[in-house]
Length: 297
Image 1 (cartoon, rainbow, N blue to C red):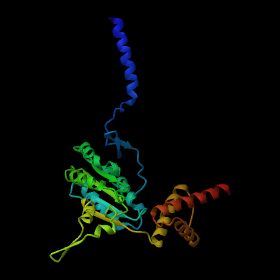
Image 2 (image 1 turned 120 degrees about the vertical axis):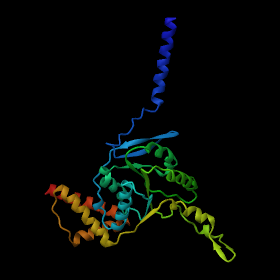
Image 3 (image 1 turned 180 degrees about the vertical axis):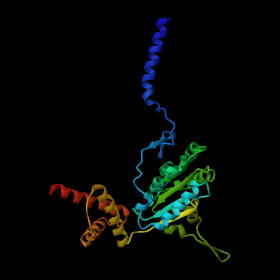
Image 4 (image 1 turned 60 degrees about the vertical axis):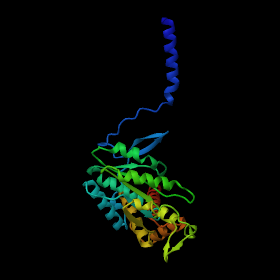
């Protein structure tokens, strides 16, 4: 009997050894007192919150030329942190103009006041009820951040998302807000064909319901903030700011002049973009180049 039992236990251990790598690792609960941000990670048919080690270097003062957008979203976030009514926000507009940076800068500004950030991908927004459920009764305030929330022509996922947002946002606890960024105000491309079947009923013009269906998705957000392409003056001001920041850290002495402005404009022209991201990239290039020249002298 003992030999049969030992044989059974040995086989059981062998089976467990083969199965163990296939089993999900045990998940530790996130300590929100020390963790400032997390990402919703899809895991098969379920998912979990993965703690992130984030940098708080980006500050609200680093965002140049978007004062109105910064003030509005900051005020909305402050209302949220104070337990006052606040709106879910959609930041839309040209790429590289500071939409995502503004949301991340809010974390640096208000982390000490209890703000926490959770990133969730567009394709995982159907999991919103699960995410929200895990945040109930937690004594912190959470901004769910979805970057680049938009849909391509032919995609019908927005209908599913619309119903999910309806249920999740309306029933969300008071400590959860959704902030999303998009290059499109209405999130879904509108086609000319959407307007081909307008009808005249009793002298009143009724737009095609497909148009209303698409526009309705962005209506789930109470606060809309628009971001526009940079003027050349705005672009050069951002270049100057980032060179000042990077040069100061490196101990580099510098002075803005016409030659620098010309180089910065050429850099933007070569990329077809005149925005904050381009300005930051040029500043890194220029400061790095000057430091290399000093090393070689």
